[in-house]
Image (cartoon, rainbow, N blue to C red; front, side, top):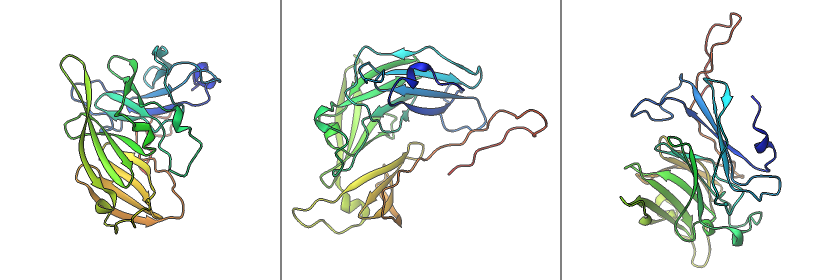
Length: 264
């Protein structure tokens, strides 16, 4: 399929594949054989990155792209973390970077989060906790009650934030818990004055599992229970991309029906 021209003109754009099921109570990611939607989002329009965010949805049922969806608010970042589904809304935040990296100018970052509502097909910018993008390492998560949450790893601590929306539409971020990272992972405390580098390699929103790179080791962390396990050693912080498989449409000319991509 051809990508809409406006995305080809953007330096960066991001995608997310979701189930197209619309039945009540359906959870995206819980099915594998239904039609799917592909959501593309560009945080800035144009080759000069001077336009507001845009999004567009492709339907495997119709084989067509929908209308372009935009917002009048301009986003303050270009590089994004992978889109995370919370309820029926997709969220993107600024890309997490290690403390040693300087390819992102943190002085230019606001606390923006891009929000795409699948039900209303609307795009908006919301604010994260103050100083979100100065943390350099953070991950949007879904909390147990379905609320939007944030895991922020900064200065040797794991902070969990929750966003609550009032009946009048006002939103407030609350700090739910703060835990020392070495306690979670079963590591000895850091020597006073030193800093332990932590990178988020990936996140599985269906199971609430985060993959962390700490001291040349890769850990798997269950965010709600704070239970962790060391997976393996690695010299490099390679990103993980957990995904849920879908059945493709039946292949004509006698190839024998749908085939399934295997989970990795």
